[in-house]
Image (cartoon, rainbow over all chains, first blue to last red; front, side):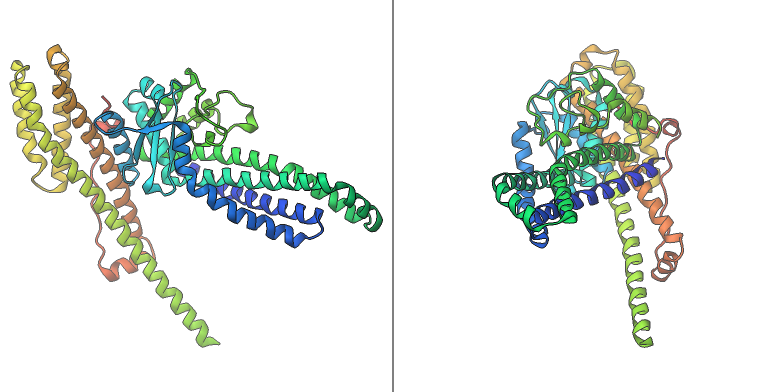
Length: 295
Length: 182
């Protein structure tokens, strides 16, 4: 059951990622079609992605730490927390990640890092207050599973990709708005039925691509959460810790003060509390507990 | 044409042997690393116990027998075969658990900073041993499967990769395969 879950999640993640790349290409095609040069549109979109992506990607780790207000703690300050992280890292065959604490009453945790062996895990003070050692071990295992699976890297990439699509669509929309009159005349004079249909389709793509990208990103994130839960149990061989942690979180206040839309994917549970189904970055806690109990 | 095909097949074959060989080496090294972790933690426990006994001695006059047992078991952590050492550690874990349970009856001891620190240190070494043992078994089992399955078994035979021994999971942990959380 456990290994099956891991395999299935891996397949879905790969499929979702293909959708992402297709969306960047589709946006490029739509822009190209609207402005009369499909090849230039595609090349432009991919080039834009090639420049914008690394920029976001390489500064993201430091940005996340700064955005969330996390501070590093030493082993002397928090011996138990350090020990728990060290134990799970050992089970995951990873060097011990850096340990951060966020001063926030909402219990939550996250992991950042662009390579599994150069990561950091952060826990809110609210989380440390309500978890015993077993539950904390479950949370730490979940975060280290994210590092192990390269999720932090993947999710940052996903956030950056959404950014590319949103920006491209936005630029396209503005250009169309300002240049609308002139093109309108041209279109009427020298373009026929099928071509007009194509233009309409391109417009539709331009409007829907950013939304589709956001939804895909959230679905990708939800999947990584199940995957990390399964991997965490694989490390600790103890689903009880995670179940206990999630059960306690159900009753706690959820809103993390310094969580932003961009960092939401990285947390242990959704940092905004209740959100509509398709816009969730995390699966509902009940569903996660149900899957853990089935392992 | 046929010559090229033969060459291609030969290249693929060589690549395959290299991949199989490297896989075996990787898992064998991972298993060794996991064992090295167990070894480090066993030594750490060996070093922690005199401090614990020293701290506890003054408070627990009526438990000298348990303390003597702990000291006796301690020496077996660092001598003998790997399997013997891990078994000695399992026995020691049981006795330490008793000792910490008994300590509940001594409020002064429970308030002692050094005692609390040692309790936490011993708990983390115990968990690390449990995790490292799981990791070792997982890795050694994967290594053994590779070593025995066709066609990697031919490579293993060619280069003399021997089987790896798994560590037994103690009876008490088999029911709930878990480490202790304090």
